[in-house]
Image (cartoon, rainbow over all chains, first blue to last red):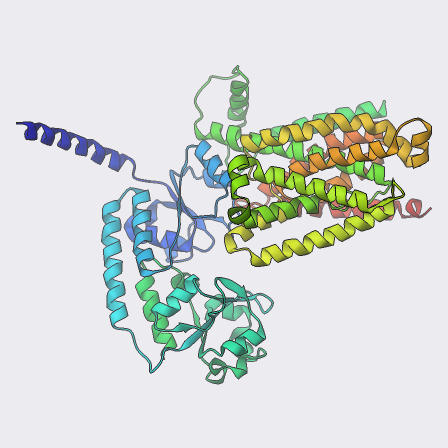
Length: 281
Length: 347
């Protein structure tokens, strides 16, 4: 008898929470990083995205959306003008003041911290799905991504030894940075069966010719826009020091799509596979 | 008579630009709703008191604090610029030239970069106000340092003070650069904000924090106008009339530091207002500080409100840093004054 009572209460409660669940689902979303935009789209909510940031360029239907933030420069009012009910933003991109401003306008902001690892990717997907209010689909996509990653990792090409990869982030010859330990690039290189050529420091630090020669990478990796900003492959091979490295001698300069490499979400398997193919060619 | 006209024109101009600043922005809000929201907030309503929802929020929570911050920061920079030019008897002196702004921003950058390591206990104590106090302290320390460096036989020497200011600026710039190099990406972004200046972070919280720091100098500095007028003739003139020149100097430096330090704390470095506004004021109505000080405050408020509107509206949906706008507006005018008055400056 008592158990029955509890059972009824439980059903009522779950009914109410279920209706709330549906009511809380976000309809008008603003996504402020390429990984977030791609993940929301992969969850099937691409049509609910109103605007994105300047890095959100794929897929095409996301690229067509208005860009309200450029290199983290944005105005609270222009974002508010879209009357969003949810803003998804990487942790740290909004200042304390901005968060307070959106809060006082009654707009929900969810800041998302991205961890660059396999576990981080599935966590990222689940977090975003939870913010949108569709945990079920998040679980589905997270599990699919995880099994894809496992399949990809088991099918990786293996060389006699893992190649040393140096990543250069370039915006013209004057502004070149290399990726150190703990960066997103460091992690994707390791997952793809390579070895980061830089082990001395973490994050990104300015590039120097001597450091390049000292690290002597087997492969130099760049974003596609990075290589073109240096004037293309031939111009890059002519840069001082490049010809002294294994990568320069063997002309192993590879360029890859930036958003794909640092997605660390639903496209992580694709990124691992593509990078693995290129560095172990 | 002429001055009454100038006061009236500037006041009307400021009021009009405040109205535009509240009415224009990325959100298209009908002017009727703007008026209704404002009158409603003041306790009565012209039109029907319908709930405008998010539009009301944008006006009350985003545009109004931002406009007020523009007025306060502009007035603070304008009046401190005029007062500092007065005691230095140098038309090039401005808060950033004597190192006050650099000291404020260096301290702010240090706090941003090392907050978690060094300032955690302070941060718990002061919370939100830590940066403001830090910037103020930085401004105060550099101002005192520059002032003491420039003392010769107990007298502050103006050219030494300027040179000391340049040295402090270079030092603070180098240290800021060093911290920037060590800081991670996220902190770098906050630091960039400080170097470029923006009113985008205005909330009621930081506007009310700024208010007393600007109000006291705005009231206090005009009382020193007479002394500053005598400074223009020569320091000994101040003594002859029975005033203490050193006391005037210290008061001006303290009050200006207060205004500039607090402004930098909430909006970052906004250049050219402190330099240019006093020049424009003197161009309009002469060199009497009883006129120059209040009018510089008024004009600073007006120009910064306009500059902020430009920064918000010109590259929608994003914003230009306001420091870029003031420099772009300011430099041509400054060069014009320079070319026009070149002969006068030499003689």
